[in-house]
Image 1 (cartoon, one colour):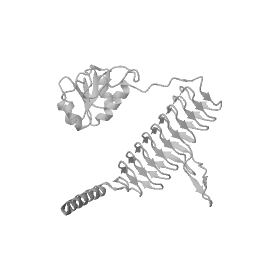
Image 2 (spheres, helix red, strand yellow):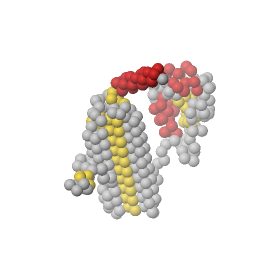
Image 3 (cartoon, helix red, strand yellow):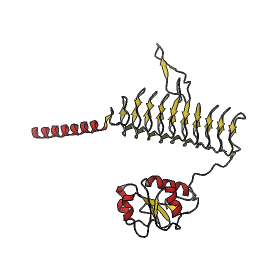
Image 4 (spheres, one colour):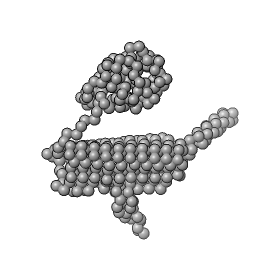
Length: 346
C-alpha cells in the first residue's frame, strides 16, 4: 500500500464512476466498483487505483493487479481484463486529483495553541489554526482557514490571504501573500537581501533593504528555501509559481505566473523571469538578466546572458541547447582524435 494511514488518513472509498469524473476521463469498467487507495502499477492491489503516464513502465501494465488504472488512450486496449481503465489525455493529472480526493490535506483545527505568542494587534481569520510556540507579530493579518505550524514566526505587519499554510520553523517578514500560499518547513521569506557598499577603507556597509516580498495566489515554496525582500522595489513571485527545496531567490527578482524552480537553484538579484519559465536543478542565473516566457534552463546550467522567450539553454555558460550539444559532440570527437594520435606516437 502506497499511503501509510498513520500519516495519510483515507477520506473514504470512491466508486470508479466518481474517480473517472474526478479525473475527467472515460471509464471502461463497473462504475459502482469501489477503490480504497492508490498504488504503483507493480504493487497496487485490486481495491487500489494506479496510473500509467510514462511508456517506460508500459511492460508493468499487463501484469498489474490494480483494480483500475488511469492511462492515455494509446494504452487503453492493453489493460488486463480484471482491471478497469480510466482513459484521459492527462493521466498524471487525473491520478493526482483522485489521490487528492482520497487523501486530502488535513483541514485546519481552528484555535490558538496556549504556547503560541500572538500580539494583541494581530488579526486572525476565522477557522485558522496557530500551532505550538508559533509567534504572530504586531499588526499581522492572517486570513481565514490558514495553518501556522509549530515554531513558525509571522513578522510584524505581514499579510497572509485565505487558506495559507506556513509550516514548522518557517519565518515570514516584510511580506504580502495572496490566497493558498504554502511555505514548507524551514522556509525563510523576507529577510535582508545581500546588498552592501564598500568604503574607501575596504569595509562593507549594508545597503538598507527597504522593499517587500509579494507572493501571489497559489505560490508554493519548498523546504529550506529563501526569498529575500527587495532593496528598493519588491521581490515578486507570480501566481502559481513553485519553488522546490533549497532554492535561493535574491532581492528584486520578479517572476511571471507558473514558473517552476527546481532544487538548489540560485537566482541573483534583479532577475526577471517571464511566465512559465523553468529552471532545472542546480542551475544559476546571474544578476540583472531577463528570461522570456516559457524559457527553459537545463540542470547545472550557468545563465550569464538574457534568454529569449521559448528558448532552451544548457551548459555553463548557458548556450542554446542544440548549439551546446553540437559543441559537446565536437569536443568529444576532438578528444578521441587526440587520444588516437597519442596512441600512434606511443
